[in-house]
Length: 328
Image (cartoon, rainbow, N blue to C red; front, side):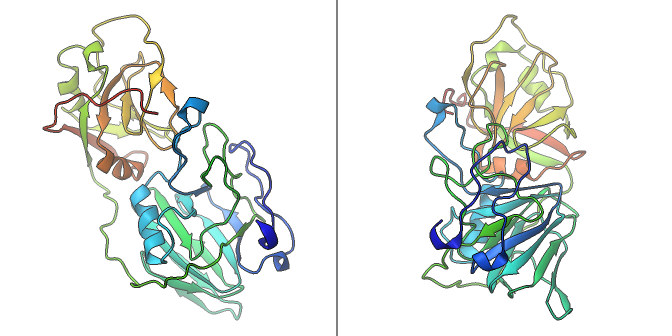
């Protein structure tokens, strides 16, 4: 971190803690966390190539939203941002900053040191003056909002990534009140757009494309049809690891245990209950329950914005080749 200050060593992500505590004057450009909301984590595009060490990719649950935020600020697409679940985040600017919000749109208000307040737009480039506060409300639709800052959140890397993995505990601690998040140097290029008119996350029934999974033959002949026949409800027992679903029971055709094998984002793993779990960014590297289907990569981001109580439907795509296995 050099002169911008040092962050605390990585710790178990389930235990909130300060990334950096100390005098604001220690850093020239930073975000001071006043309130983290229900769940705020530092995320980038994740760490790849470490499955043999038991380390999953992690990274942003909605990768497209993170990429968009960084493009708007002329950051590298994989720069670290804050992933904010169900709003509630409040931060104060240390130094003049440029920021943007993408993903789930939420009410956002900037309070200036002189007492003036103003709302800011979504997927737009906004100035956050030194000492100003930014407060996020609860998004009316969608689940995860991304706060990006020009220069990126500059916490230390772990295995080549700044992402917080809630399953393994790798990466920076979850920001807590008083956490000081350093901001990296501004990139040489300048933003070329100040607004991106992108569609908002869907609030109705969410349609997700799937391929047959590597273990679809462990289920009865009608199980894949049952998976796509009726909507499933996203339960409250869902997080960045996986989305637990409630709906038609998927019947197995064979008993016995399956040796652990590699898992991928989007895998629909089915435990003995017959109710599938859709793996998201912090999924385990391996799993022992059979995978009946895999959500296609272009719809995993869409799935990451589904909130508890929302319903999802699965649609088998024309490509009927079973999704590959063993690629953590």
